[in-house]
Amino acid sequence: MAVLDRFRSDDLFAWLATYSPDVFPISQYVRLLDHDEFRLSEPITASASVGADAIWPSLILGELLAQGGNPESGITAVPLSRVQFCLGFTQARVSALFRSDSHALRVAADRIELLEKAEKRWRVVGVDVLRATWGLAEDAFGQDVFTRELVSLISWTFERQREQRGPQPPLPEELQAISLNLRKLATGPLEYRVEEFERATFALLANSHAVGSVAHARLPALLAALALWVGSGTGHVSLLAEVAEKLPATYAWFGAFAGALGPACWHADWARTTAAISKQLRNGFDIAAPSTADLAWAEFEWLLSVGQFDLLSRVPRASPKVVSVDVLPGAPASFRLSADEGHGTHGDAARFEPAATRQLKPAVTAGTPGPSTAPVPTREPARGSLRPEQIDAIAKAVATLSSLLDEARSPQPAVPDEDFELKPPPAAAKRTSASRKTSRKASARK
Image (cartoon, rainbow, N blue to C red; front, side, top):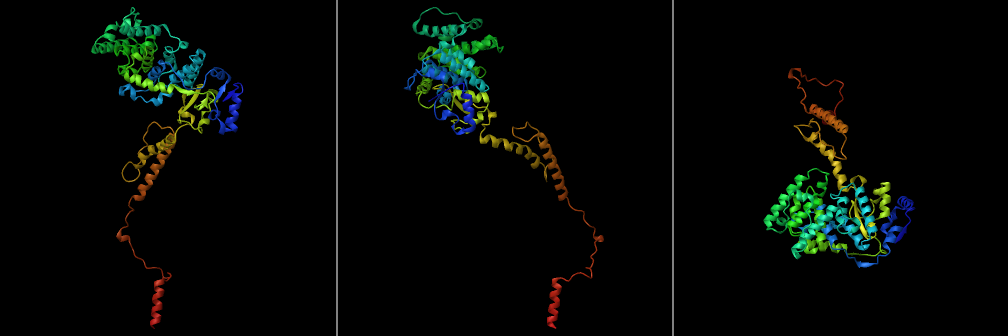
């Protein structure tokens, strides 16, 4: 382990990257920390496993579905290899390792937000939405009044089904505006519940069509609550598939609400998948052991400030387009390298080069005998293809070559028979070898 002075780190990284690239980044060999990270991590004892609150696996599963999972084929079919790409996974590790320390949680969230901005927002659901869902797991993130009241209403619904206690909290104003029949939605026969869900969903979408409005921002949370009510838990998450195509944050809120309700409201597939995610969260941690991430946070910050991520092109990584960064010790996050940073694969380069050849091929092979003079087809130029003026010049050269070949293949004019005259060879013509042989034979006979 190496503790770094942040005031001198920029000079150190610049020198290593220039004069000793074989040892950059240093995280390949030791765990690299600054003084603040060391003070935060010092109380953490080495352990073979780490326990995380039960709400976090459900939060991560919701984010996993929101970032591109397809629950229509079954929750258990979602690839768990993507779990460590979820930002909620990083935050869950911080929560477990640092014992819900509010300062560590906020530092991690701020660094995750910086990671997202540097990635140029390739994620479907951003940190702004995820922070709101993390508020259900940690008080450090807080909850607004709307979220707090909605969580209270959801909790009352499921507790009343079990214990029959307490008056009903008021419905949010958006649900009051559509005259939601909560009794029919949550406790009626299944066909009535689905019917009320579809009616309420259509009404909510119609009332919050203005993107950017408060009603539109609250829509994913409201739809997630409806799906929990109609399924008496997580059993009918597939009802959100259609609306989640336009509002993927709905899945993130569904996972957050399901986690807040607890395992008693999870159906079999949801419980099995969250158990598998929980196993990944329990990986042990030892601050004296080398980090499994590709970069320490100090190294990532320096690379981001100088814009030289191409320095990582020769560093072995698990993925050619993704770098793992230790947001805090023991809590890695994935940073996706953009395509313009020189990290394309060999297949990308091979794909760019034949693009120009494919553009010219129709001009050479089309047409009847001989090369065609058809113009080069116009299309959007692929990245790495020839420039338009180069294509025009080649097209003109093809046309010239075509005309020359046409002239060469055209028949020559025939000479009339009456103009043809056989003339004797000149008198001074040199004798051929055949005439010399004939004269030798004649002299020999004599």
